[in-house]
Amino acid sequence: MHNGEIRQICTFGIDDRRLGVAILDVKEINTDTEFTPIFHAPREVKGYVNIRGQIHLILDLRLIMDLPEKPVDEESRLVLFKPAVGENFGILVDRIGDVMEIPGEKIEDRRKADAGAPGTGDRRTLEMGSGVCKLEDGLLIILEAKQLLKHIEKPV
Image (cartoon, rainbow, N blue to C red; front, side, top):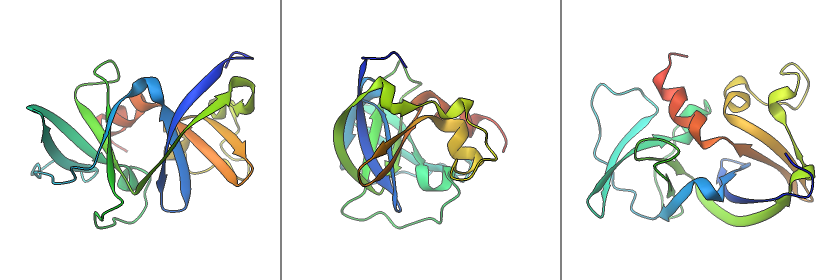
């Protein structure tokens, strides 16, 4: 991260974790959580949705992070990514948060962290994460959107 650079992060929640992605990677947040299942797809693939004539593959972030599956409810949202991140895809999250402006120097690069150190999180989160920011009320784990789709493409 460059010192002085302000990063805008779209935040969301999974269980009791606060996560986020760069707002520049986000195409839209959508409330349409009706999926068409894809048979024989990896377990983390929730299915696909048709939004304004475009088909988007939807990944269940809970399953990618090895958390128990949770039924979709009224707070569930889809975070859809821009084509530059990957073929039309998005993630299912438990709830959406705010867009936060965070100075680059406040973001600790987790890719350089020792994966065995206490508090660094699980391996999958480390693979997908690009940084961590300490907030007054907890940690914000910043995910690298491109890594989400790559996780599905490779065996774990």
